Length: 125
Image 1 (cartoon, one colour):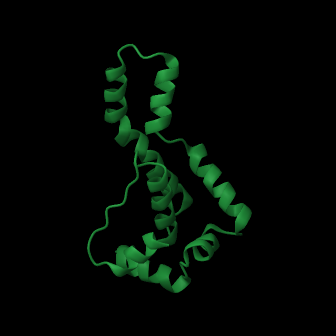
Image 2 (cartoon, rainbow, N blue to C red):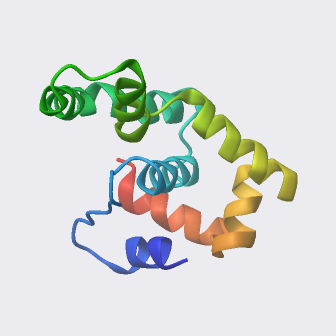
Image 3 (cartoon, one colour):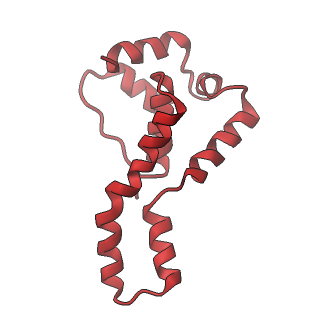
């Protein structure tokens, strides 16, 4: 709930992240994009952009391992990258609890239609 409260209350840019910057952050970004009216296609495209932007970090980590085994490579890619299935699984769980993601955002985070409209007014140009 704090995430959307901060976005609604502040007039300054907000930087949000987690340890690897992809799991909690990726889901928060997906929720924000959904609240702003982005299509599922746009949300997935943004989510999967993580892989492209993480590539230098992944390559650096693999170089540090010196001749990484296939298991080590898989671990590095899993830890620093994302897969569509991750977001699919999150949506699947959400839709077990609510009929739509928008309703879930309202039920779980108090993001009413009015608050969503405020976010849209604030962030969509």
